[in-house]
Image 1: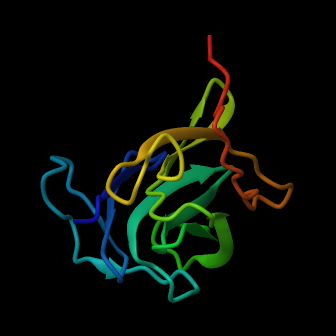
Image 2 (image 1 turned 180 degrees about the horizontal axis):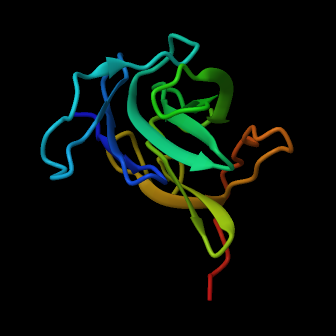
Amino acid sequence: MARPCVFEDDDGKVYLYWGVRAPKVARLKDNLLELAEAPRTIEYGNKNFFEASYMHKRNGKYYFSYNAGLGGFYGMADNPYGPFEYKGAINPKQRQDHHSILNYKGQDYFFYHWQNWNQGSKFRRNTAIEYLYYNEDGTIQEIVATEEGVKKVE
């Protein structure tokens, strides 16, 4: 089962993102238990979506990212529904990366799982964290997986 993503926008509206092979989005009611609208299929500018939808926002842009079965990819839009302009890979070298992105103390971080070290496998994965950086135009720089990850945050 693919994990859903809950995203709260600046205006307090909350959205649910989910899907396998077809990404969906719907706004949630204030009780966060029911959909406030019919689900919409997300237009993301490609046909490589497999599962693990994720949404984050930075500088007024919405970033819809997901797992394509062979790594993480994303698109950008001006609203939480899209349509998203496909931008390419974030983490293309890690199968089933199932990532999330957050900002903590002014630094962006990329959380994912990695199966290629510490005796990992398709069904035995390791949690990893890397720094996430953006280009001047807002696009995301590709993640380079490291065994070290990030430094301890005080």
